[in-house]
Length: 252
Length: 252
DNA sequence: CAGTGGTCTAGACCACACC
DNA sequence: GTGTGGTCTAGACCACTGT
Image (cartoon, rainbow over all chains, first blue to last red):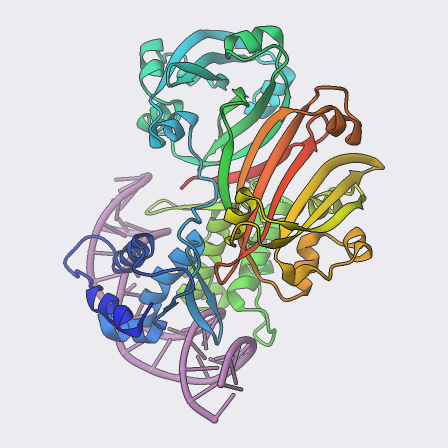
């Protein structure tokens, strides 16, 4: 990137003080756009915090907050004494808490869902521990078959608190589970995941349209809300020949 | 948690202004310890930023920086108007950029490494693209067998720039690859990963001490330094019967 | 040595959650 | 309302990087 091009970019930056969007966020968005557009290429040095603050008539902490946000996202890197540089266009936020439904939607795969069963079950030891409820107490067990491009890709088994016993199949076949939870006011906070693999049972292979003894990816997930309560426990299998977990992660 | 216990905790908090450790970090560490100790349990309300600032004679932005750090780590959650609460003791940072060697070390599994081969190879199209170098140019190809508790658990295949052609087997059998890179001044920044599964070939099953056609986890990883350059590309397989990827992730 | 990011202060006003 | 976190300012000094 030439100095002239950098100048152009700086001139293009602006903040709207009457907007309800925070100033730091406006700046971060514009820088990120420039990076994704290719107007700022990997390795390019970005103006210093003080310089940007002067140009945009912001305080340095505000500019810094924008930078912090982008560093956290992994798109820029700062080195004391050396400046701030664009890292890479293709580093994404470290593995967001998203559902398979949303993932497939984003990649344009037209997901569809079939509810195989929805029953009330006594919690096994494993489920009870995961949901932090007494063993043998009642839980909602939900089994869904998720397909993409009209081919089955995953069998999703979820255990939910009895508060969600009123979920309907229609609802579940129309929206992702997380989407439904959010619509009900649940604030998802974090999840613990375990990803493994094993060979499919005969029934599983048939269900997922895979050959006998094909490898399947397994994933178990416990989702928490922001009060620390368990929202959901799931144990899922994915057709390994057609599904992968892709994500970026940042250095500690 | 009782109000008295909370008071005790607050009295226990302190900052050492002569320490080279940043004040915000000292505070964050103490709060995190209290959470991990169980002195602060999930759901407990933490003092407000203003109150903590007053007690510790810090400015509010400094206290806030400590809170930000813990929110980012996922151990506390803030809600405007509602206060700050401890979320959970077992949410960890979203999947750190660490090596299998370090992971095994941490879980007390005594990893050992055997270098199966280390050669200079012409880059295939896949490797060239991953390393951002021309096709057919030279790269260092490294194949290692990683064992835990005296049983093989993964075959690791890495491609490195020719700068690392002087790595020795002795070095590689003693330390993790990331450890070696860091010692050479490489600053790891982020990685893109793809986790999948397939059935093992006969040779792979034998190498990993698994039964024929067992499922193996596959992982491909491209690691970047903080200038946006590619440090390493790896394509690995793991014995699925004895290895899982475990991690936490935070809501976007 | 000069320049850069890292940390810190002492205030301020606002939007939202909860009572 | 009242209290909380969310945002913002205008400075300051220090530690590290690269020349």
